[in-house]
Every structure is written in structure tokens, then in C-alpha cells.
Image 1 (cartoon, rainbow, N blue to C red):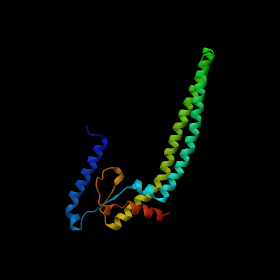
Image 2: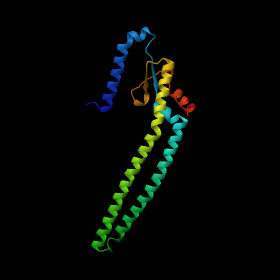
Image 3: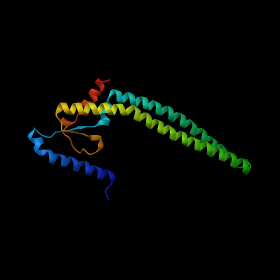
Image 4: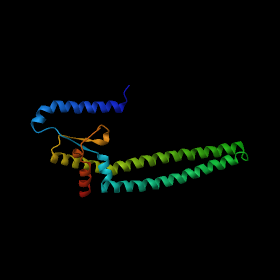
Length: 179
């Protein structure tokens, strides 16, 4: 049974092939059907704005991670202390402290989940405008070069492309020029 990725790849390639064959007559009559390729993730990541956004996100991630690491270490110490005191505590006291620790662990897990969601939101907020800008620039370059279509190489469907049709570096350069 084919995987979902294989199925999507097959559908994408079939669609491209269909478009190429359906449009071959008129496209060739008008000078050809040209396809450009861009790696949007690379263009964004290599741009000054993308690097600045990544640095900001990394700083935020490191602060959240440091906080969570400290809390995790404190919980691990409490757990070890409780294990060490198990033989000296009454059964009732041990169970009560164990329940308290379990509550703290549960709260920690919820905090870690919230931190993960916060980082995901921050990533989306930082990258969405850059993605929009990269798409606008890609469309502009494609129109100026007369491309019939531009494929995002990051999608994994491109197996070969003549470097003359790869506009990733050009998109990055124009992103750096724009503010």
C-alpha cells in the first residue's frame, strides 16, 4: 500500500504531466512552457529577515527551555528525596507526598505543553509574513522571467532542475532588499 507522501507525490506529478500535455500546443506555439523552481524555506531561512526571526525565536526557545529544565531538575530532586525518605516516612505521609509530587509533575507537563504551543504560535507569527513576502517576490520573478509555473522544491517533488530555472537565491536577494 503506498504511503500518503507517495500518493501526494504521484498526484502532484500526474497533475503537472497533465498540465504539460494539455497546454503543450498553445504553450509551445507561444514560445514554450517554462517551469521555475524555488526552495521557499531556504530563501526565507537565508534572508536577513529570516535569520533575524530565527535568532529571536531561538532566544525565546532557550529562555523557555532553561525555565523548564530548572523545574524538571527540581522535580527530579523531589522525587529522589521522596524515594530516599520512603523507609522513614509513614505509609500515609509517603502517599500524601507522592500525590503532591504527582500533582506537581502534572502541572509541569501542562506548562511544557503550553510552552510548546507558545513556540509554535511564535514561529507561525514570525514566519507567516515572510512566507507571504517570499510568495509575492516569487510571483514577481516568475512573471518577469516568463515562467509558466514555479514549483517549491522544498515539497520534495522536484528530482532535477536546471540551475538556470532555480530562483531561490534571487528570491532571497529581493527579500533582503525589501523591508
